[in-house]
Image 1: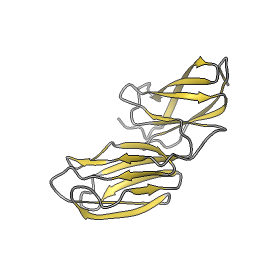
Image 2: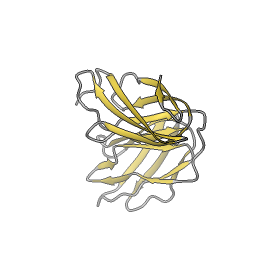
Image 3: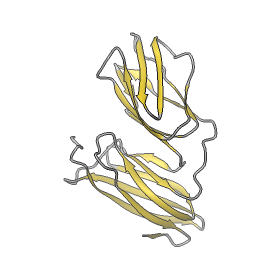
Image 4: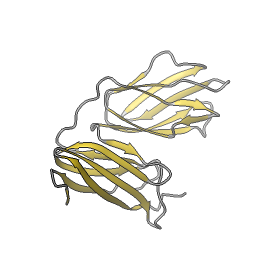
Length: 187
């Protein structure tokens, strides 16, 4: 699906499931109404925190990065195992995180710490078609859409939020505002 024509719509359906927390259901569609997968949906609000030293994994299988899109919070380390029977050279020249993991097989020596917010493109210096993306966020409230274009943000505390969507092929990122309260209201 060619998303370069830009994302036209993301629908926000919200429900409050107890006094101070809410669940936000989001459906992402393109200008023709097609559901969009691999879109990072995230809520920026008053209680954004740093990650509690988490670790994520981006594997290399069948000469592809798996998953294609990863979302994580600032302060998360990523391990880049190589499950292929050939060597890979993983790199990023993105401003938010520049690094290289020279040719290796198996598990890379050390995980890579993502300590700055931004959107990062990964590549393999040996296999040019291998590309993946990492959204490094300052909020713990995020989810990636599946094939049905849906994501759910759970446990949103009461407060004002700006909901944003990022997808590697988008030319612009839509956003919407909402309030989470005992009686959730979309603004």
